Length: 238
Image (cartoon, rainbow, N blue to C red):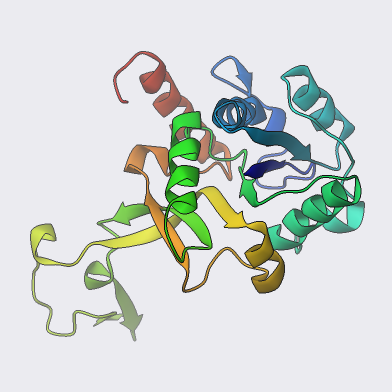
């Protein structure tokens, strides 16, 4: 099997300017994802790790830490309103036009630095070995944001989202619910081209622990994840 790992990293972040190459725990943010992707790729017979970016500065950092930047992303695909599917399909089509052939594509967002090479390889293996599955996305269990604990407001009065009887439930009494945590997206390339989505009825969920599910969008996220990465480095969490 041939696998293409794509790390999308545009230069125009507004929530936290320059975040993709901002140093966190001793190295640029994107490097955590480059290292994870390279670790997973090293265990796959035919795998390639590339970065899709419109920024020469990001490209330089990516190359310095061992990722390929075989093309620069067009500015039209580096705007706020552009979805990740368009970016992934562009990367896949560009690599195929250069002679590459890939059975799977793995999108590795740089904003989730706590995901490891082990996580990516285990997820890829699960997808590859599951009959009928076409894609996989990362999930994490939600507790405080469970629908049974959520409410709307109607004229400032509580209007429960689901728990209309105002019954108090313990966590052990309700179904487990998950959210899309954003650390990994994997798809068979044929499926991605046809469906133009990682999400559909043939998508597997790969469960990630809560501490790995945080993403960096702003400075608050950055500070939280920096503390978690330090805890991982010193063995407090694993």
